[in-house]
Amino acid sequence: MHDDIYQMYLEEIEAIRPCTKEEQDQLLKKIAQGDDSARERLVEGSLGQLVELAKEYDGQGVLMGDLIQEANMALLTALAELAGAGDGNGETPADFEVFLNTSVRPALDAIVEEQKDEKEVGEELAARVNVLQTVSQVLLKELGREATLSELAEKMKMTEDEIRDIMKLALDAVNVSQMPAMTEDESEE
Image 1 (cartoon, rainbow, N blue to C red):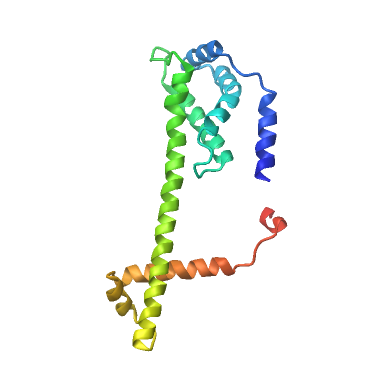
Image 2 (cartoon, rainbow, N blue to C red; image 1 turned 90 degrees about the vertical axis):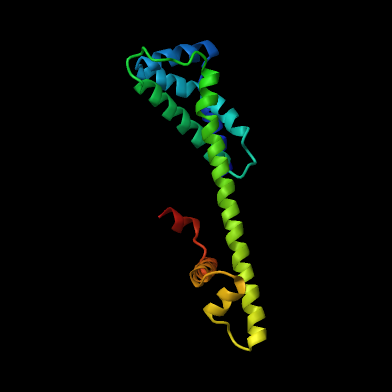
């Protein structure tokens, strides 16, 4: 379904006349002077360019739709800041390409990095849960009974609170995996 939405988006923006480089540079100057219609035209006429920029980040752990959305939001935010810079006497970027690279690329870099960090944290937590399960099994065999919280903490060289947190994560993961799957109709309600 996401591919269908992405495809529809691409078809919709194909119908929009892209801005030329000269038009983009002129629109930037008008935006700096507070021209809202210039901002609308620049955003609309740059959508295809934003998709191409987002494609450069495809395959790095973030969905293409999210990359496009982030690129669009970064451009809108940067243009709002440019328009809000005041009286039109401030410094206006002379080149839209440079403006795009300094406003949109950092946002795309950040979302990719954030996704990588989240994945690493998830993998680390999963590893801790696995180690706790292994240590619990070893202690069960050694002691002939379930290990206490303090015994687990001592064996893993962690605090009891850390062991509790890992147990809670493991329990939450089990509860989520046992939840009945929602049908498409239920998720739309």
